Image (cartoon, rainbow, N blue to C red):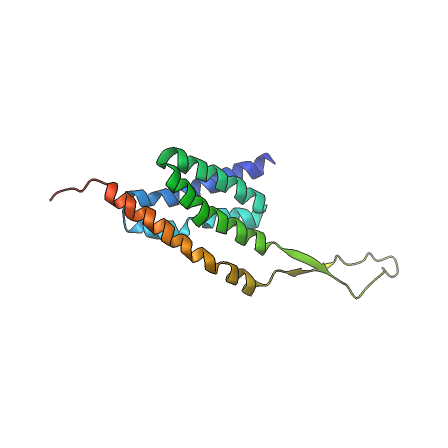
Amino acid sequence: MIAIILIALAAGAASALMFASMVSGALISVLLLYLAPLPLMVAALGWGPLCATIGGIAAATGLGVIFGLPYCIAFAVAVALPAWWLGHLALLGRPIANSETSPENGVTATPPLLEWYPVGRSGVTTKPSTKKHNAASTCWRRSRRLLPRSSP
């Protein structure tokens, strides 16, 4: 359990740093903003949705403490929640009935086959998350106005 928490905190920290790069106002920060859910998604696929949940909560809390409540809410809605949800959907599986009902000649039965959640449906569930980029870009534009302008 300790390893899962450490991995979750590392994924959350990486995701929060990518998201927080938009405060700099650099053009490359837009790319990092779009890649911010990736560490949480990897954690969700590798160690389960609970790992992504812990990492997302830790990252959102850290961003909220450093930058304020709007960044905390934008991160939670735009990055952490979709990463957790896609990780949850990708790991959904249910056993399907085997044709063998009993082992023969002392051979153990094969493990049950799994039917995974359809990839097409998980793509459909991400359509509402395109609004997350609007919220994140609004925060980015607001942070650009707060930065001091250097005169030539």
